[in-house]
Image: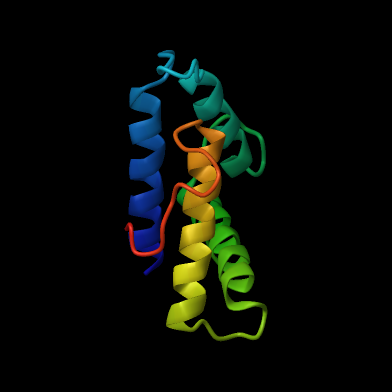
Length: 109
């Protein structure tokens, strides 16, 4: 499981890095985003990310996400998962200016 998390996270970093230096249609500085994310993962600030740092980062992130989604009771229901996903999706879309408040309807995704 840890290796699967590491592979997914490394792929996400690599995919973001592929856009480094390019600005999207909303003027997003992908290079700055990659640098910022890399620094978050590089726990000892030595300029490289080890597998252990990546696994620790992803584990902490997953635990935080689970606690938020489950309401902190240690169990996640399907309804909680759907509501959490919808809320995160709406926040992301607003952040990137792709939708106005209320445009996301239940079941759109």
